Image (cartoon, rainbow, N blue to C red; front, side, top):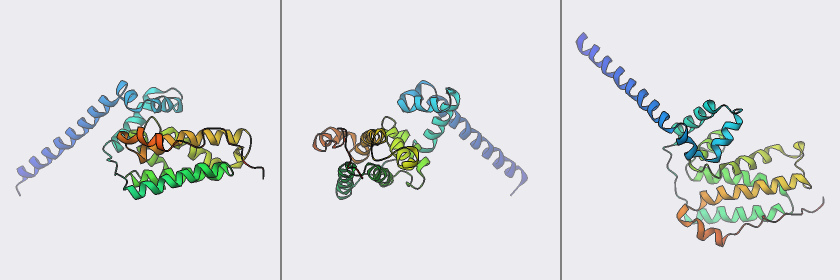
Amino acid sequence: MSTGLIVLIVIVAVLVVGAAVALARFRRGRAGGAGLKRRFGPEYERTVARHGGDTKAAEQELAERLERHGDLRERPLDPAGREQFEARWTAVQEHFVDAPRQAVAEADRLLAEVAAARGYPDGGRYDEQLAALSVHHADHVDGYRRVHQVAQAGPSHGLTEAGSGTEEMRTALVDARALFEDLTHPARETGRHRATHAPRVLARSHPKES
């Protein structure tokens, strides 16, 4: 191979890499600002708040999430798998009355499993799974975040089986249900299934005294 041909190949490779970098920056720029607000909705504001009001840092984080997970295609659930997930969620809600903390922990595990079944990163990589979910389910992903935080906190953070801790767990579980329904029932089916599977923990629960 001649020296001239080698030089030409190197130049072409450099141009290709440069074009790819420019395209990535262009896409990120298009996704920034108003585009990110539209895409992420309430998750945009939560991210800005978590960065102490630093909009630039928040938008950089959201743009990186979009770049990593924007092309993810959700896998459909087979009917049998969907029914199993629904039965387990119903059991979680029923279990909440007697053991709120254990029910929330099970809801946390169940959401991780459902998300993995739909093609999201495995639940063992919670942060990555949450980031991917935030790209495609921005309106409801915070419910999962809250359930996970409550499940990880436990009694040492005041989340006991009675009092305000139970109310916090109940609220987290109710909020997480929206993401569960998003994952188990595509948008075209959501209205029909929500009418069929009404939440059972909307009312305040009164766990038994230990």
